[in-house]
Length: 383
Image (cartoon, rainbow, N blue to C red; front, side, top):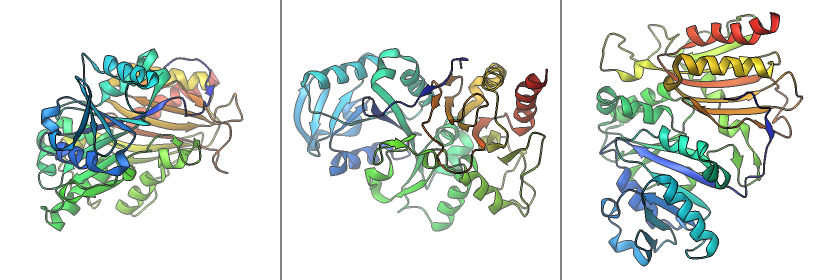
């Protein structure tokens, strides 16, 4: 994260939204993708996959645009990763500009079952040519309603896939018992309170439920901070599991809504803190609310120190900031050690002008982040 001043929000039209579809092995990701490719709502979508054979496209094929591209009967364009993702996305964009392939308005990138979605997000953020043409819309993670709990127990990568998701698709809900599904939903809510959980019986999901998870609302052609940040989900989840509000003052009137650090014995989360197999015990999801305007350079120093302390464990950070140097709000968004350039909005989304910063972390909770925030933001101010 650099100390560069935030830039005014640019209109989203020139950059194409990219959704990252991830999910653990056997979680039903391929079945979901096959059904999506049938759906008329996928028209004008380009889907980037690892292998045609894995998805089984033969019965959907309308025409072969090139060696690694096929046109589906829904109007969706499907292509395999050639070389690496950067080359594939650049090639797609150039073919679109030249008219070699049908126009598309969005891209879906499927990861492998063991893949960490973070490198794909980093690629979109860090490659200058891609960043000028594409923007991250959101991360879609599939979780198997039948075996999801055991996968979360055994596979830390499946926990991370759920933790960084903007949308969680519960697959195989037709095979799972209501009790099993409810327990899994509660567990996923503790890992990632803000991600909507979308049931998919037999792999059927309306694409409209999966896309448009980013900062920009395509309907209004403007930022929709409330929909993107969903900070109220952290408060709602906290209130659901606690008999008291968790709005402790820490000086300078900032408050925290934390999952994982503060749960009591009756919280209902079934944490089993001594069970080494509970990988999601390491996940913290909380929202910091700050009443006073934040000095921008001090905030940058805080984030750089936090990244240096444990960048790999900062799974996702989203924030709407009231910065001291500007009457307009600033949006920040990071995945691990990589941050999007900060964006200054043209107006506040409502009457509430407090800063709100959502953290989803691994092994870094409020007990670490809050004192560091105080030291760098308020301590530096008073120095």
